[in-house]
Length: 337
Image (cartoon, rainbow, N blue to C red; front, side):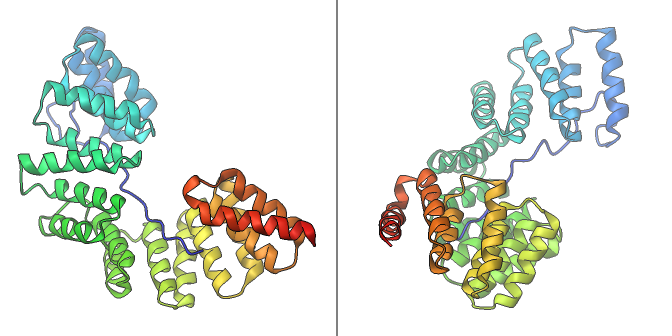
């Protein structure tokens, strides 16, 4: 059971700081926050100052402080379009995609041509797995501006999520031609689409480019490692997956994928160790449960195999019906031995 999984773009916070001072491009966040706080003390009814401070908190990564300020800005001015948009970004980064979508939708009601809100709502829909709505929003961006690089990028992500690899490649290529600010993610996801098409050489070339742009991208190493695995180059696959885990020791997917490589290489003890580590981090990871069960079954560890198959059945989704049937059959057979 060889499963290829790639990450979808993480939604980013605002690309510029709306500061209380005249120096809007500065990144001296603490000074700007202090200036905003002084302005709020002088006039606690100014929605703009709460918004600006909340935005800077968001840029700083302090989402818990950003949210109350943006709430206050909207309490003072319920038609503050940018405040809905920035609060939507904060919710996205907190993983609350339903609230993010609600805020982006509110921003679009107030400003129907707000491209940023469309493609960030597209990203939020993609995070929820609703790729049809993600596609509709990114397409709307391109209707507004046919040369919007990020519109092509987000639509490429939506096509990727829908399994339309050719259109994903086309849109991500167009995004790169138009100089998307997410170039490393575009190469990474286009590489994933090439891999899905079975073109592993082009996939590796794209992953190489993504890693040149962002050498600390654990996902890039994971994806390139899988491409090497698909080409049968297990040594390079292990090297890349080790690098992914060195960058992120809690990267569940990399443990799982390295377990697959060890499994294929008949290093069964190492494979089980990686599947176990993945399951420690994500107990509901049904694919890891299945592969662990199959390994234990092959090793003749009947009791442990039955338990692993049962754990798989506990978490397996309905679409895994073939594996569900196989697991049920193996449990019955093992219980009769």
